[in-house]
Amino acid sequence: MAAPKLHPVVRETNFPGVKLLARGKVRDIYEFGDRLLLVATDRLSAFDVVLPTPIPDKGRVLTQLSLFWFETLKDVVPNHVISGTEFPKELDPYRDHVRGRSMLVRRTEPIRFECVVRGYLSGSGWKDYQKTSSVCGIPLPPGLVESARLPEPMFTPATKAESGHDENISFEEMASQLGSERADQLRDTSIELYRRAAAYAEQRGIIIADTKFEFGLIDDELIWIDEALTPDSSRFWPADQYAPGGSQPSFDKQFVRDYLERIRWSKQPPAPELPPDVVAATSEKYRDVYRRLTGHELA
Image (cartoon, rainbow, N blue to C red; front, side, top):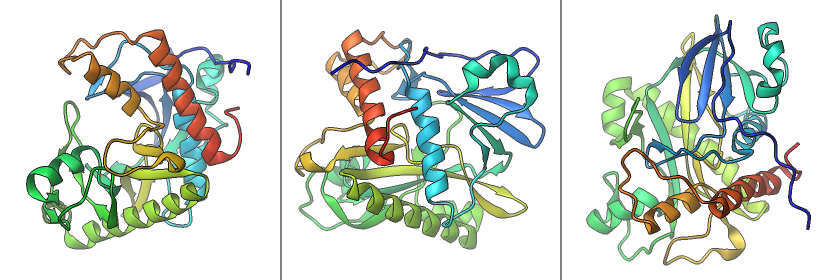
């Protein structure tokens, strides 16, 4: 089987004459009045540290998969997407860096919480359960094993940190800051998005173990923003290899986290370079989950 043709790596963008609003762990954000351009680079962060080694095609997968989910689930909640193909004329000189990895979106007032939905007991949820028999203060039945399917999807919000680690909080704490009506809306919308996406993915051999959503407001209307059910924001497991009782093979950056754990990196900057085999395997995992979920190759 021939190796896939990869697009040029984009670690960082620089568009003179266009206002750079922010540079996140993965996305470069440019300002156009009440619109924003989100450019997903090929940067990868692990343990809240941006790694020095980019992952080919990663940014394109994040953008194209987000566009797919935003369109597929638009009847659940409005989203911020204006276009994934048409951009302001100021970007014409930079179209090779923009094409395929960018979204022009409506600017919102962001809600400063991450809306996490867990369908399976994994990651920090599993660690919490081992210590407390609960996840984020929500009691669970005794005797569950790692990667077990939960009785019902759980909503476990987190604070959104500008730098460093996000922190899990209780639903009640979020409600005390946002008001119970808005908190209920965020919980119910997040769980419905997860249920719909998980059912769709299951038909295509993918388990969505957990994911996180972000939302903003336009004239007090709730808007789904940022990214949508990508390998950066979700745990994707192959359904045909699912075996509760331990960690699962995945299509997300858990593969890189596992490598960094094996080499006993301190999880403090600077991060180590990734070896070529880890880079190639990670890139293929991102493209593979895109292929399975959408039914076609990355364009």
